[in-house]
Image 1 (cartoon, one colour):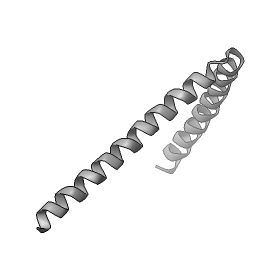
Image 2 (cartoon, rainbow, N blue to C red):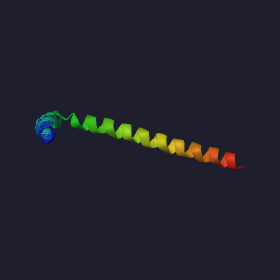
Image 3 (cartoon, rainbow, N blue to C red):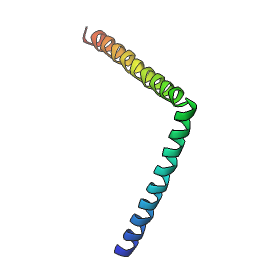
Length: 70
C-alpha cells in the first residue's frame, strides 16, 4: 500500500509539473497576442454578474422575510 501511494504521488507531481509548464506557455502566447485582456474581461464580467445576482437574491430574501414577519 505504501509503495502504491509513493508511485501515485510521483505520477501526480510529474503531471502537475507538465501541466504548469504548458499553462505558462499558453499564458505567454495570449499575453503576446493581447488576448489575455479579453480573458480577464470575460472573467471579470462573469464574476460581476454572479455578484449582482447574489445582491439581487439578498434583497429578495429580505423582502420575503419582512413580509413573513408581518
